[in-house]
Length: 200
Length: 200
DNA sequence: CGACTTCTGTACCGATCGGAATAGAATTGT
DNA sequence: ACAATTCTATTCCGATCGGTACAGAAGTCG
Image 1 (cartoon, rainbow over the protein chains, first blue to last red):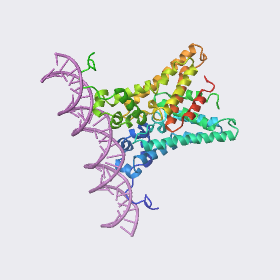
Image 2 (cartoon, rainbow over the protein chains, first blue to last red):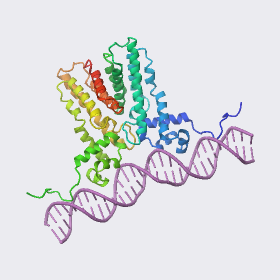
Image 3 (spheres, helix red, strand yellow):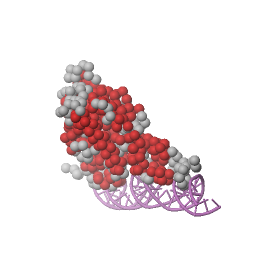
Image 4 (cartoon, chains in turn blue, orange, brown, red):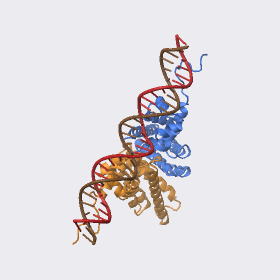
């Protein structure tokens, strides 16, 4: 079997692209899109700006890659929650997963929520991709609830869109409170409270 | 009698300081603390940087003044809600006021929530004052619920801190969804849903 | 061995950031 | 009139922003 890097010509990359992306994700998570400078990012990634541009294109594309990694890692609870057998299970799994991620994993808070809320000129690209993420998550939850109505899991009169907006609002509010230092146990109580008398 | 500006010596200010502050508040509201540059701010205020520094000190102090104006204006529903005769009335007034402000008044969303969520170096001063505002609002609501328990308005077993965290979480989540384009009526339904079966 | 391709480090780009220095204009008191 | 005071406008500051040009280093090809 041939040389160590079959068919790949040119000087080999000296850093692990996944590990660099993980570090970049953590910086974006902590500081937001605009608050994370290229100096912050490349410093944490352990590479130079040139290497970052060669590997990822520019800051916005790096952010998209970091967001994808966040979605598949710390925020993977969102997709998993939809697979719960009941609507209530999905809502609870989503909210408990959110509490766990925003308090115990990485920096306090949620990259999706605090990455770029205001729409200043510089943050616009990140703001739009994050708003899209949130809207999509809400629609996925709505779709899950719609299925629950069809399956008889939710009462026929239930409004899937309304329930989904409510669950997402609680989740986003939990993320905001986590940045204020509210802890894991207190936010679990918020989830308990939000789900009392489900399906409301 | 006397001269037009009794006792005030020196060249008179040529702009209305309240109107300038109102404009600055709107810029901070829309773009956040870091996203609002001095060029944006003074442009909207209709004054030069020199005049702004002379009148307000620096960007951080301008932000604090703008935040105070926001508190007394668009966010005055928060203080008014505490004066409702019942705990449920306070919670509902708070949430309905939030929906109104984040969808119908000024830019979409809430200055308190989206002003400076991430804690990058530049946004730290604003982040801390906003986190303090949110924590204080939560404690005020908790105190209001504590009073309601003492008055028999809430059942003796109710947990004021827990209810307050829940109500604030829903309010913050509503603010986030407003920035995603969710409208007034849909957010009203979120409030309806959140308050079903009160006091939970 | 070169020729070719790709990555890395340095040095640098124009633009913009928050902020300050300075001079002149407009008002007050004497 | 004149000094004292406070505002406005222009100009500039060092630092930092995201992004790039360039040269050399490290590989795969023939």
